[in-house]
Image 1 (cartoon, rainbow, N blue to C red):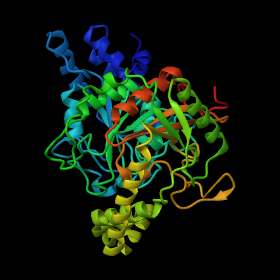
Image 2 (cartoon, one colour):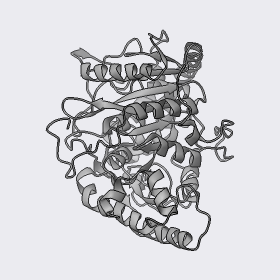
Image 3 (cartoon, one colour):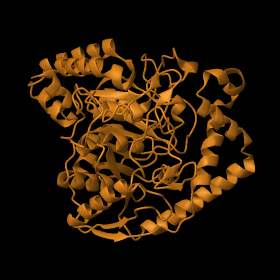
Length: 479
């Protein structure tokens, strides 16, 4: 089977081919590594390619196939891991010069579980320093680019992961989401991204910071690949005091077949306050209509909860300073200047301000819970704009009007504050050929409903056949 064909197969297809001995783990891994070698110099999706480790793991997987051993669900399937997530004896830098030569002695729980499920780790994907912003560039690893247009950012902070999936550099990627860091780049790169319920996938061991915001989850080209990956990742672990018990509903993959007829869906084009690019608004409106055609009852809504931006800004800055503030005085020249600015702001946050923000966060949860008591799902645009220049800054205006500092990602961070499951599905392309995503938010712990809705939308409006040009040149049109 041709290497290029293998590189674009879904994880479920690859696992089946390997199980049926129609493809070997070695040839699958070789195909992906060859594609990484050819394309990564232009995209910079990977900061570390674990070529030797991947080939060793693939060879061991091949021996298991040939010896007739029982095979786990992801046996021989390539996966990338975001460089914030610890990988035993594979360099993990967090995108920081402070950890340029850091080789962890243990895996994060999520990585441990992927290995146990048979996945082959092919490398570490780029992230901004300690995942602190929504673009992927760092003093250590440089600028990561969007496969759909190399002049544009893939978003962040799981930007390398999204770019890798979009460019066919492994069907599975493990990312983290502290304020949109899975959903934002998945939207910009035209792939599927799932932020599971907070605690669904145990976190750590790893870098400190953002303990109550960050979710670990899958980024893939298909919904079922994400569900298959979540089945391997989910479940309690005593090393993470926030980890959830096993979902009593059973397999997340099975949830993709549940259907969504009869569900009550709230559609909010702006959450009552966001500025949205007209092209994005139109594409997401069409996606909302598509969901209604699948048997849902879709109602246009305007949530009344207070703007949570100040809550997030205060708590995120304070927690970042608590984690890295001791490095500020001696190492500020080694740090990303935007991280330095965040640390300096975090240093000014008083205990009273932090506790006030924490109280307001609890109030926000109560308001969101009451709102979703009427609905099974909430849908919004994932991002209010398509991808912008990789070498630039986030927009300060949208649709001709000034926005607040977080006004360019108003739909994502609120659901890190509440911890609800949320996913982004590709909803179409702008006239310039840039992907746009629709966000699907579930009730507390309703990951299965989010997956069911995502799978139903994918079946009605498939996207995985859309691929960036083979040479990854900036596109002339949407194609």
